[in-house]
Image (cartoon, rainbow, N blue to C red; front, side, top):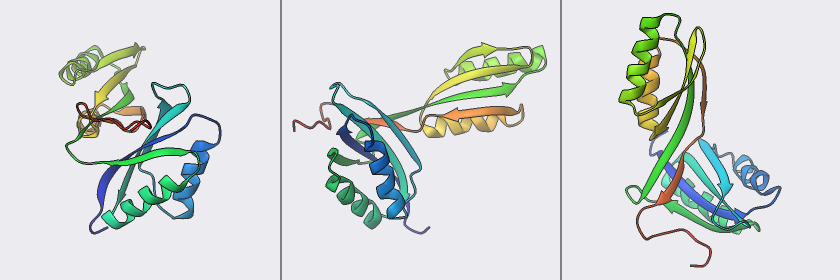
Amino acid sequence: MKGEKTKIISVLVENKPGVLHGVANLFRRRNFNIDSITVGPTERADTARMTITVKEDEKTIEQVVKQLAKLIDVLKVEELEEGTFVMRELALIKVDAPTPKERSDIINCVEVFRGRVIDVSVDSLTVEITGTPDKLDAFLNLMKETGVIELARTGITALARGAKSIRIDE
């Protein structure tokens, strides 16, 4: 759609059951799509961080941020501005590698992308690649010829750059 941009929203929430359901339900009720979502504990045991990636226009993003902030279990919400954060994504990719030559070519590609081969079988390799979504996409495009058997991507996780941080004690 016109005016859509990929935006990353960092959300600090209470680390307890049902919080993810509440956040996902807000998106469902408003008919907003979540591109990716990662959730995990923070440096505090009682707090979890959600990194939500959405493709929407600016007005919709603003609305999502405001509505998230109103949820009871949400402690802090912040839209990460382009250039002010670092992000990574992890992919596990199982590729077809039936011959020694194909296996060697794949391993060379993995090294160029600074990935790791984490499993080897008679006719396939499982590769771990970490980086930006563009880097993962580029590797996957190279592997199309070889044949991707299976793929699992974690979704984006991100933190503000430098001394800036998204914390509840701010």
